[in-house]
Length: 141
Image (cartoon, rainbow, N blue to C red):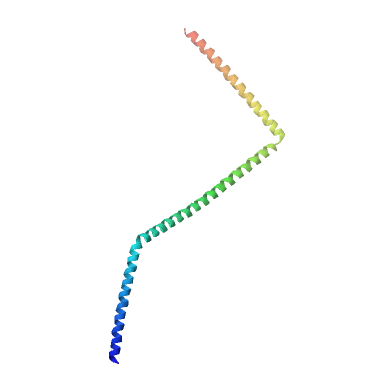
């Protein structure tokens, strides 16, 4: 029957209007909850941003540490190489021909003797210069 269908239609429309009102009420409650929790949400977002920044900085510091460790390893290798070269040079000196070593000692001794003679010669020249100055001074009066 038509009146029953109309009543059902009106009832369905009222139920739909009630559902729409309930939905709007729920949406408003959700909006109010979001607004109420927004400061806390902002804090969480801020903390996450800080954490991300710190994680990036930590990653960079790890990279920097790796670079520093590689540089240190290179420096250690260079030091070890230099020590090996020094040890080889010491060994080479020990293995030098004894005659060469003897001649080098003689040369150093002769050089030292020449230095002594040279200083004695300079002292003699200075003494002669001083006596010449004294004679010149004496003759000027």
